[in-house]
Image (cartoon, rainbow, N blue to C red; front, side, top):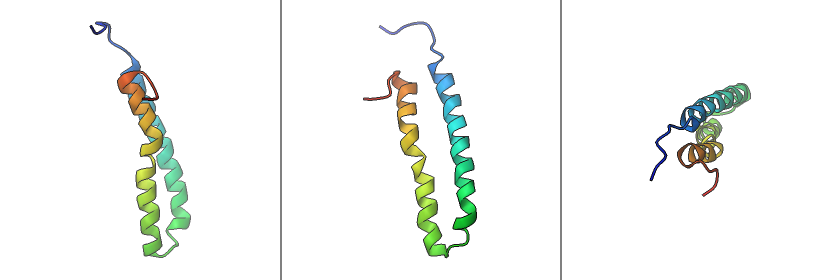
Length: 72
């Protein structure tokens, strides 16, 4: 049986996720200046890597939001 009381874990978790993504975005933009000087074919893998890299640190947070635990 589920607990009828609502949990604040989901709203706090989503707010934390938004804050962490904003911080990640600022860091990625800080990296942008030197990367834009590189040839386009070198830039492409860098931008792909930066576009995917945020998922790995966010994964435990999303798991906690859904289950209440950071690990499986």
